[in-house]
Length: 492
Image 1 (cartoon, rainbow, N blue to C red):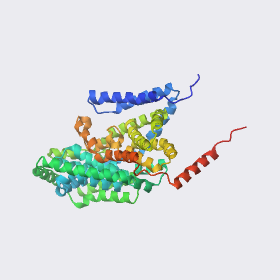
Image 2 (tube, one colour; image 1 turned 90 degrees about the vertical axis):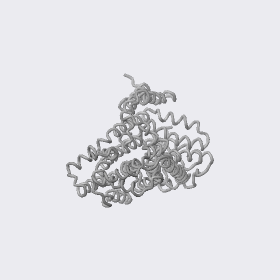
Image 3 (cartoon, one colour; image 1 turned 120 degrees about the vertical axis):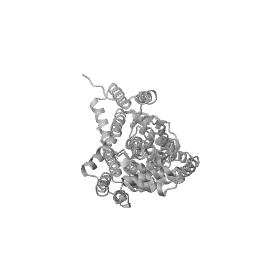
Image 4 (cartoon, one colour; image 1 turned 45 degrees about the vertical axis):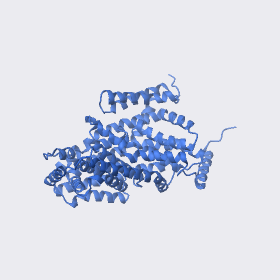
């Protein structure tokens, strides 16, 4: 039997599996009203594999492509498992309840949204993880917002803005390290080059959240009796004191000492376990149960029960399974050449630098949509766009910034992406239960989508778009010479 040599699909054929997947996803979301994107994405894997087989790709090759991308996401799976443990045990330890009571007592309701952005930014910068920030401090802020009668989607938008912006700028973040590694630039040069888009986007977002805070509270009087009920209910069921902040403070301290994310977060989980046993009288077996199945309590106060009954490894299974299917979809699209064909088509039309930079940002964002993973959305465009930047004489710092803005920041705005799924699950938005109005957090996460737009505007205006330096050009020439020397000499 003769096996055809694999060859890439044409442009429209490359777009077909993506288009069909989104059609099925649309039926699932809008016709059936069921927010469970797992099966549509799995169908996308099958359709892409069928097209790959028709183009001569063997199943083993496509499977290896899927497994390669899945393996890249395994660290994220580990983080999700530990975040689930932390959520459950930090509630049981009283850490999250204490943060809620502090916030309800100290933060002005009108300033709450702006304060939430700043708090999440600082914590995420310190921890280097948006997911960990969302599942811990973000969860506490959701409780405070609930006490102030602020809609969940407004609080979630502020939490996402701060958590993912801090992640983007933190030298401890994996995505912040991945972007310069893929594009071959220095980490701290990369961070400095992101400031021109980061600072204006954050300032605009803060102004919006300040205005929204006064508008939301101005429309209604704050129900202080409700706040007092929540605080007294928490004080009745938990022994609250400043010592409950130790798990959070030690975790931040370990992160600042540049400990890797997984052991840092796991240390936070173990400290939460010890705190729960020492301060709240939780038994070891019960603590293990909270870390696995989530915290459970019946206080008689609906708002408290709805907020605290969550967490555990099991709460993350929906996210993890979604992430694995989405990673497999991205992997098979990459292995069969579909993504490469689409990117090449985009590149062929990007004549100016402004068009090139906008295309790189848009490609990172679309890879988030179809690939479901922020790491793939940084790595793929970072590899494929690099030659185009060199050809136009622009520094790869522009590309590393584009990958972060379309990758890191857009990830939480895609509900079936790993980042979006974490936000929906960790913040308890209840989308799968029919609370689809909470998807409004997406347009309300202003800092996340303003930064890419500002970056595109800069590129077309020629602002903050560095040309390649003499050292960069010399490095490119050296790399080209080394590549030429490694090529075999053709026989005469």
